[in-house]
Structure formats: structure tokens, C-alpha cells
Length: 165
Image (cartoon, rainbow, N blue to C red; front, top):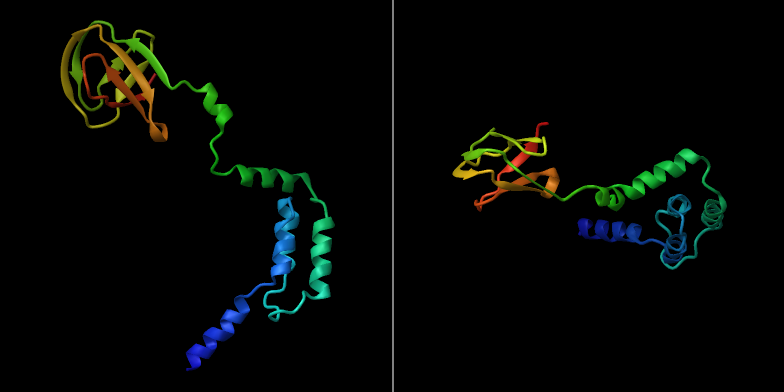
């Protein structure tokens, strides 16, 4: 029975003042909104209006401007965290096409490919395949998590590669 009463007591502490939450939620700027939430009473009485001290703290938090430029810079960095920078993505190529000069005999782990455009790529996975062709065209595509895959003319397997030079 004591556990039951303890849970009821704790549940009353979990209730927040809906008016104060709605007031804080309507603040557009992050720093004043956080200050508003911080100023809220932790365990108001159920059905009681917010105290004058909490209301004054909320009003002061809403009126107070962001103090320094460092706070503003940190705020923008936090807001950008986890988002893909689409401007940088536009500048990156998704595919390059070239060829391998001479006779090609296939690949195995750590094989180096010297392309006709001057780039050198190395096989970065454990794939291996014999494939005999002269001057094959290749296509390197960007994959997930920064991986690159080399499609070689006449094969259905695209080894993961890493640029060496």
C-alpha cells in the first residue's frame, strides 16, 4: 500500500502548469524559451495559478535579449547539428566516368587501378573477380557513408574503392 501512495505522490509532482507550458511554447527564440521553461515551478498545486515570482521570471526571460554573439553562434551550431548541408552537397560530384588503359585482368583486395584521367583508386573491400577486357570503361559512384563503388564495363560486381592519388 505504501508503494501505491508513493506513486500517487510522485504523479502529482509530474503535473506541470499547463498555462506556463503554453506560454513558454509560444516563444520563438530558443534562449528565452529555455529560460521560460527553467523559471517554471517544478511541482505546482493542481489547479492553482502560477505564482507571481514564476510569472515575473518568465516575463524577464522573454524580454531579455541574447547577451553575446558567442551564444548566438553556439545556438546556430546546435540547430545545424545532424542536418545535411545541402549547399555543400550540390558542389560534390556523384559520379565520374573514365577508363583503364591497356588490358584489364580483374581485381582482388588492394588492387590498384590507374585511370586514364590520372586518378589512382584501390579496392577497399574483399571482393575479387577475374575479368579480361581491353581498355574497359569505368564509372565510380558515391555510396552511403562516404563509400565509393567502381562499376567496370562487363561486370555486375562493383567493388568498393578508395582514392589513393
